[in-house]
Image (cartoon, rainbow, N blue to C red):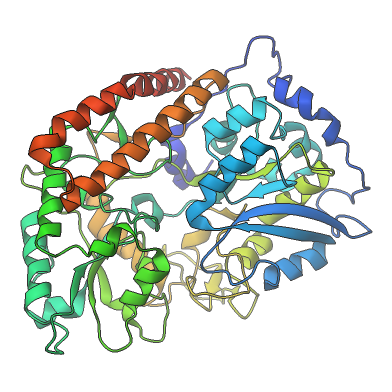
Length: 557
């Protein structure tokens, strides 16, 4: 295993614990219920060859909607991959903002498609629905029909152990994206021309950030003589863009990675949460101050990413001073005609009143639960072969970036990559624009750290170069040393069922109260104690106990 992948995965080397009665990790109830499906009804070509079948076959796939993809059905990569594999896809596209609600409804109703792709099914959901037989175990399918997946496991054994459930089964394939800048993606972006116009420095503390936003609001930096500047506006559901994602880390460590254990961390071997601590209260007080001064747009709690981008790309004049997110495409049009996206620069982690200054670090270089085959699949072997092919280098380049020699090409002799080594490929058209030639990071793909950084460094305006440098120079120095983000944890079926209800109850309440405390609908001095007591009543202690048990077991392995 090479050095960079060891670093990427060292924080979460997974373990396998076999359930009682399972001597080889494969004889689970989930497999027993799904074993009749593993005999394909069609004759497949030899693994690693194309087309996959002689006569065209159809797979029904539920997929997460992607704002960068115009239409999965007419997409260029969809058509290309269908021609190569001889497999037609019937798509059911689920809106990104409601994908978890839709997933829950589908799983409860058992109205499954053949495949669920891109819905980021959590380890807990994999364990629950895998052992119940709704998701097929993939172990034998990988062995017989997954040459690329087997190579992936051989090259990076920690990936296999990470996605292996407690019963020894693999219920979902991951998307591999060993993305350096993604590992510290809770960023704030600020419009640099306004700083220069008002003779302001990049803020380094929470007080300085307040003063900058105040100046944006009051000193007409866009120069149109109107008080129309919006100092800070966000979209709660965009990538790493919630109101607490960046600013709360000036008060307490607040990673938002992982749907079940966001705001959760490990300190001195103990699991804990940020949102019931006095430091969280002070962070909310700061956010409330920004809101009451008119520095946070009220729409921040209701608008979607498209509405925010309309603000960021206002055609007449610049309106938006700052926003949060993993990259500027959360609030502007990446590579848009205005070029405005490149004028927003990353704000380093701000030092809070007590010296707290964290850049939260993701613990995983993969997205688990990217591809599952359900018990309704008539040809699970075909589904496995179809997904396995997406890990091939050319297929990854096509699915993520587009067509060879149009959106990307092989590197030329002498070209240097982002990492300073000889480059291997070149991104002709930058990722991030709305298009219909690729799937824009939807579904299985194989992008290691080496792969990403072997792209030709195309100057300072290259998005990947910009994000690499902003992360390296501004965020890496503040990576946590005394606390860590929770790694992916598989739970037993009983634990998963219990924690799923607890996580939804607790996290929904926390999200509701963040908004209420920030806008002043709830009073921090009057209502804080009741808020903490309500968390206790929701059995937060049991929630932490379950994850502590799983973490302790993982630590032993």
